[in-house]
Length: 286
Image (tube, rainbow, N blue to C red; front, top):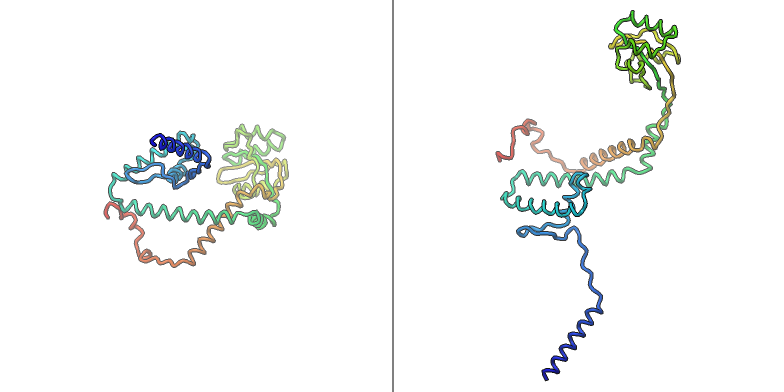
């Protein structure tokens, strides 16, 4: 009888093993942000905590290999947890800072949605048309100058330049301005980039002409106009980034105004307080 029972148990064990091998293994649940990776005195640390810590790191640290980041972040969270427990009761400053941080994070969620929905091709094209569709080409000027202290010296240089002397060499030898070593070259500039007397004299010149002495607060100038060019409005591609910033800013301001107008905002005693109160309060005094 004993042998019969033993044989039957052996058969049942073998059958159970066969069934186990034949049944598909149940897949383990994939790790997620709620997966607990450690506990410290019963306080759970999850992959979500680690992810948030990683995302808050400076970009250069986020590029570290995962084999370095994972244990480093986990050790940091464990250490912070034991240190936090050692601090005892939560100070009011910490509780308020957490409230502010949560408020800021939730506000950013709203703003990100506003920015994403506002930055469409259609909106950018409309902003481009509004800014540039009626813009006429502007003129830019390429000029050089010689800056000296007296009108007498400026007149001498005008005479030399108009007699055929090399203007750049005259500038190198005589100009007191920072452009002197470069032959007096000022490069390209448009309206509003130079002081008015200098601009007026330059804009009145023919290409290749030498001006009479021009006085500004910097001294006396002798100007040579090298060339001019017409500058068309920038292309859409050239200003798309700038337009995106403009469109986003306008959308954010509009959303804030809309939500604020619809909210029941009560300032309480704020309007009657001396703003200097912020300089006298402290959490330590509470």
